[in-house]
Image 1 (cartoon, rainbow, N blue to C red):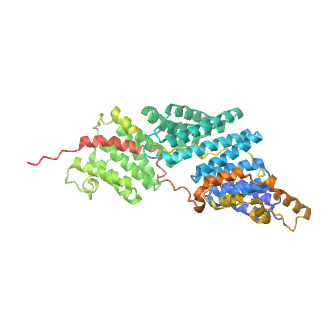
Image 2 (image 1 turned 180 degrees about the vertical axis):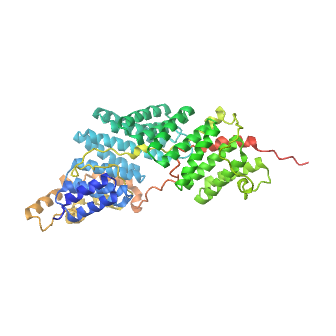
Image 3 (image 1 turned 90 degrees about the vertical axis):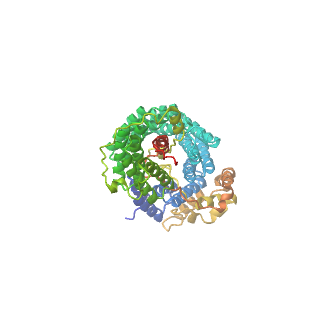
Length: 551
């Protein structure tokens, strides 16, 4: 017996729920080949197929099917489905960095949810709004300024993000949705962090931690400990930060996640450097180095060597410091890290001055006559290298890039495919723009006049002319899809706002997905490198040898 569209789609949904998105896509595509006359099922297929393609990083296909979903739901007057599709498009535009357009879609989502009295939908829209403004602020704030001292445009965006997250919290508390509260507390804490409200950030992350423990969500618990550690660093509470990072390390080991274990070791190494406990710092950086090598993370390996060089320099172990500085230089060249290469060259040069001018950078101490003993770290500790003034100067350079909790999208928990809300992540987003721009272009003419001429082709999987369908059935479906313009045409205001946001970008339709992160898998988002690097500068100046004056 031939499988129906619904049967195939249900199997696709099951596969996606267990994380097999490639197989899920195959079943969804097969479902569309079979076709269906049930517009609700077709809408659900479009939505879930768009989400599945997003998880597979095929962003143009993801946007294409979210576009089909929006077209179908607006054409049939499905307001709840239209709200969901608008939300998905908003998330898509956010990922593309097209924040003004994303705001328009989020507003559409929120307006419809309020019109329908849909509290869950309102919470989703407010959460997505917060994510858009948070992403907008982060996209323009990495300029070297410290949190709380960003340009006014950044501060405005982050404050709006906080307002939307707080509004979301009011609703999800009313609904008693603790899981949603946890996600929002995490994002709110990260937003407060960027605004420089570190005490508020700690309070939010403590709530996130509490809820994660309630659910036994060790991954979220680990992230909360990391974020608490990051905030404590900025508050100057290094011992407390170390405590949080140690708990994060313990959880990472329980989760058997080597990459995040290495991240925790890296953060602990940097924290103990700030505490001037260089022996412990070296111990954790060596652990990070070993895992980075095991995972073939050359960027992480370079960072570990850099940190080890700094710590050994602080202890006066200049030979070992030179070994790691040269290794860092080698890796920086290999990975194309120009900033790291320049820093490594400066460190090597400084160490040459300390070790003597006859030292050759082409032949390391290790290769000449010494073996590095990782158990012997030296005893000399400079206790005056990080005074109050120096500390706050260094701290002002500390940056962050954290939104781990943002990666979690709100789900409504439904298991029925025919629900207009997808059963897995609603925050699917994709960079392809041509299908969406076609939607905008059709909105500027008499859009449904064009749709009436080719509805079957514009909505794949809609079986309106099947030999197995009666004439009356076909007429009923066609009358649904091709209803009167007044009843089904997307209102001009919504699309005009989107077109206005587009501006001159209509000629430059194809936008590449965001570039991949340049950090390695064992390097945490919260990288103390500039802080640690500059904490060495004063020390190196003190250790330079003076050249004899010419007589």
